[in-house]
Amino acid sequence: MLENIRIVLINTSHPGNIGAAARAMKNMGLSDLRLVAPKLYPHEKAVWRAASAADVLDQAVVHETLEDAVQGCQLVIGTSARDRSIPWPVMNAREAAETVLQEPGNNKVALLFGREDRGLTNEELQQCNFHLQIPTNDAYSSLNLAAAVQVACYELRMAALARQEMEGTPGPKPDWGVEWDAETADADELRRLFEHMEEALVQLEVINPKNPRQLMTRLKRLVLRSRPDKVEVNLLRGVFSAAQKLVK
Ligand code: SAH
Image (cartoon, rainbow, N blue to C red):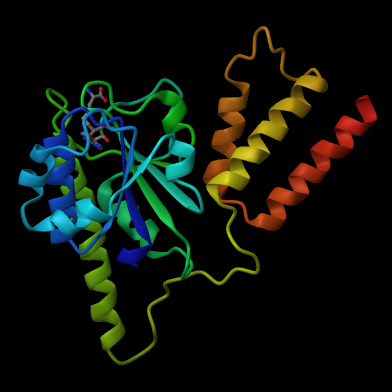
């Protein structure tokens, strides 16, 4: 389970935080680190803070865009301390780890972490299936970036260990892993669905491009929280294509 999880750090300012995140990951048995347009990287401060997790840093992949970093992921979870004006389905780190554990076997999972000064943008969070919020003190809610990575990875490890223990015990297998008849759609397929949906809804005059309001945001939230599979996504696109033909 832990091999299928990638940690994505977006636009990180301080290289020390990248190193400390690499260490937090390795301590908890994770190794797939992705850096989206880091401000200062590579950097010796990253190496110092990684200590004996230099291998995780060496293997870290630098991406230009978030789309590249989450390519092929079926489950994307964004982490943020802040509530949003259009709320996304929120989970704490324990609930998120439980959700990750229930993913079908080969599904790839991405956990997104935001900038030290501004966190994740709304647009970034709105590409996620869920919002992971560590329930911190209201008077000071934002953790250091690497500390947030540590808490998330710790819960993932605890969930993985609990599962291992259950698997060793006799009796009926725990009810983990849902059987499904089609593969979960991945981030690219959903992005293309949303582009197609928006184009069709503009043509159908459901969305006024001069005043789009939060229509697409709400539709994205609906689709993302339902975790559609590839067949369902194609069905929806078929419906939009048919509607587009009719209005032409
Ligand atoms: N000032 C920023 C906070 C950034 S902290 C803001 O307004 O959002 C850096 C990153 O650590 C965040 O983007 C998030 O990924 C993670 N993080 C910090 N505190 C968190 C919390 N309580 N719950 C979930 N993630 C958190």
